[in-house]
Length: 399
Ligand SMILES: NC(=O)c1ccc[n+]([C@@H]2O[C@H](COP(=O)([O-])OP(=O)(O)OC[C@H]3O[C@@H](n4cnc5c(N)ncnc54)[C@H](O)[C@@H]3O)[C@@H](O)[C@H]2O)c1
Image (cartoon, rainbow, N blue to C red; front, side, top):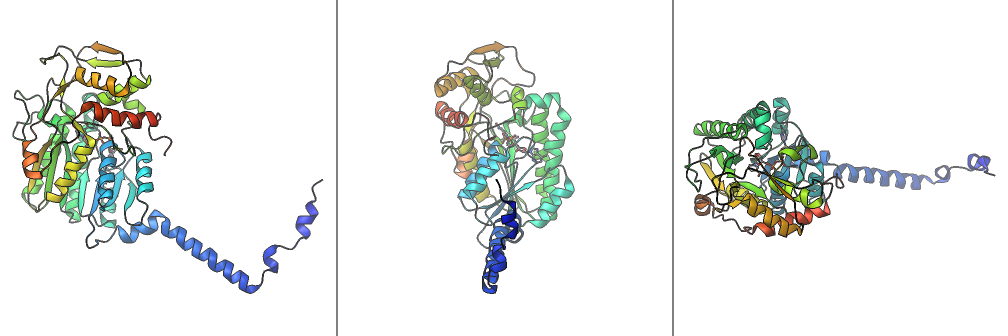
């Protein structure tokens, strides 16, 4: 039988504790509270993130919970930059931010701010509470197919939000911008490879929205001393070679998704096979040709751009390997990388796609001393596959 009376009749241990013990206990508890408070992000951010610090460059990484932004944040943190990630998690993953927070827990290294860049008030508040030295603006919706179905979303999210960022930068005297643009701004040029001089004639709302954002940035930069770098990426693949981060788009975006995601889904059996859209393009094997750039190389280009950015100057660079690969070649590389005999269905073209796109990376090589290093398609896919295999539910386990 349980003896309830015993507990009540026993004196509580603290009652018998001498005064010195009580004081010691109170002091220990207070110290514990201070330590816990210090470790809470809010306590640290207020002082460290809100003031410029000699020798520390504070970068606002918009879209840092996303695929490319998280890889860029990792690289910046590794190089001792101070990083603030702003993301509305509409497409990114809190799990990626948590990975970064675990790797860089020291006060003043990394903070995450949940906000929508379409919210002018919220963005202005972020800028007034933080002392940024530079902005890497990755945040965007970024699917060509989706942009043809929902163009207004794209103009709002890409063009209008870039305006919000620029206005906030101007109002708070933040003078360096590295902008994520895309080869989709070129449309379907007649001449390959694409140089930075190739006319920009985008053929889908995604490319048009990015081109408009570029134009706004360029017009603004004419009368300001802002240092601007516009990087036009080609098709981004791969993931962190050390396996800490990967690409994990939302399941509902799979239908608009990119080729690498679809290959991995097919290899894992999440989808029955791969649908290659378009086999009658004027290319050597009839499938589209793209220039696949590894994310590790891409973030390296960002860091180089940041280091070379100069007040009052604008740099525009293609970021690609300079080599085009067909979708068929890509699929073969994916089969080898995953070791899975992926089933492939060849279907009709998808609206908004263009036949052949690859870069001329001469300018970025000369001016930023950057060249793609991870140019073995199979190897890049193998690295990404390792992460995919270990994270069947994306970042779900980490969030
Ligand atoms: N992935 C590619 O192949 C590729 C190619 C060319 C250019 N880009 C550009 O690179 C950038 C990053 O692309 P990604 O592939 O990492 O995409 P992603 O979807 O993985 O990441 C984008 C991030 O931005 C966030 N975001 C979107 N709208 C937001 C808003 N209104 N407020 C706050 N956060 C918001 C999302 O939640 C997500 O975390 C984009 O600007 C994209 O246009 C990507």
